[in-house]
Length: 355
Image 1 (cartoon, rainbow, N blue to C red):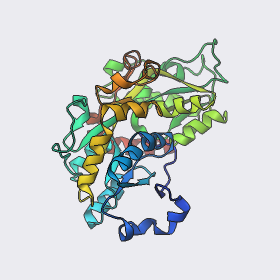
Image 2: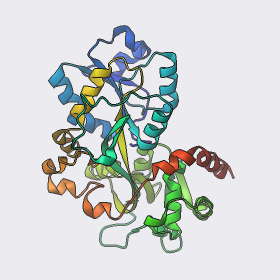
Image 3: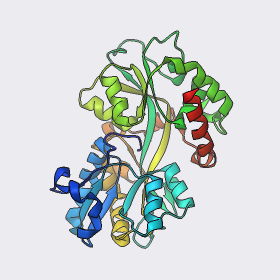
């Protein structure tokens, strides 16, 4: 998450062992790791906390395996270096869609072993030769409820975010071209079903209009939440699960589903993983209906298993991005477009930020 999320710092923890105790041995993983140690790299924060309860703990109990958690987020450059050196430290990765597609294209992933991983109940769009979707999530418009309290007018679209005359507020955005181009087009009046292929020139002209109004550019979701909590910004983009987790913890924030950018995260296995079979067994356990339903009790990301809805509390279901009422307000990121164009868009974004 997914990006770009809370706690994306490089540290390793084992069940029952503090990060401080592990510290000096982080880079000596293979000197002491046993055959049933599984290294999983995810995104930290409330998301990985939820994975620990719903997936990691139950798998350890059922198999006797020990899961070693990396909380930095998987980076393609680091994965490529591992694969090319033949010293692959990771066993399972939680990848965003565009990164999964790029890693697959570069030959950095193991094919999903269908003799172990049962995808019969997984959304067809959530099954790929080199990955299985584990959650759906959205990057959405978030706001401070101190600035916009209940019962008072609130922004309900990216057009409102872009309308600085009607909506006086301090604004934040992620320092990332995707999906800011989509948000910029929505802010400029493009219907969500007419976004692709992206009109890049129009998007950057729209960004030109809002750039002077952006008080903070964030890189990690922890910052997105903190900026709102501290009152440094009143409007921001953020992952839906992180905003709802903060709201449940009493932070004065809320979200608007309209114009949300919907995407998946995927379980993948790096090519040359030391514990490939155990990795496949973990993925199989993590995509079950019950396991995915349990995850929604701890973080508000939607399941990819179609039968998980049978086990999800209706009140929880209403908070998930793929709930019917929420889904119809959003657009699905076109990762095929981004796969072809992201490198050029990143260069243009960096030049635009400096301009």
